[in-house]
Length: 278
Image (cartoon, rainbow, N blue to C red):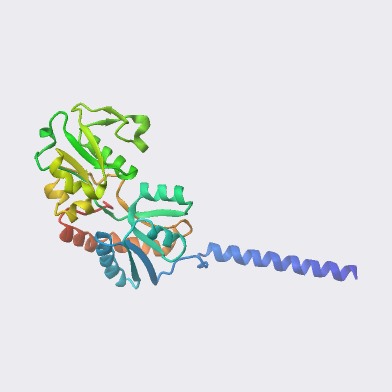
């Protein structure tokens, strides 16, 4: 009886070890797990406007490689991330990394940026002056009043040589965190969407691309200073953390980072939107 129990125990042990070995083998050979993204069909979330237009072109390019992409269009900046976290989307394309990082922190989400897409360059505009040098001492300059875009605009003013930000305040800089302001500029915080309408009452202002375009302004043609392509506010393709190394991600980025998509961006937006991966 004891011998029988011993033999049975050995058989069970061998079975367990074999099962573990099979799991490790499946993992090492890259066999698809239940959470891995499909390499044949994907749902990508975008915001209406430039992101939607660009990903429509990516969809066209990806189809040549056997990948079907379906778009889901949103009109706000919260739902595309919520839908991705909850599994309603496979990935989204609409946000820069500082926004995603703050969203993860605030919402306890698990999102990862996997590849650069486009830059919607913020620019400085003025109805009165044609260059930064012409902006007078004591000028009234507008900027967005929300934290993300407010800090972004201060980086833009610094890049333009108008101010310097305190080094220990860079990540969360506000108009109270300036180390140097040689022109003694009076910064006026306003709702981002309202700044184009109030530009006539200001000497200059930093305006987000979407609001500038809505107001008939071209960042490249009308801006007196354009955000550089090296900006940390370039947009990214975003997935759930568990999917950041999936083959499907590489397939989408391969389609995105093509000369065909680049040419479309340059032709369609005339410098108001820039390819962000170069």
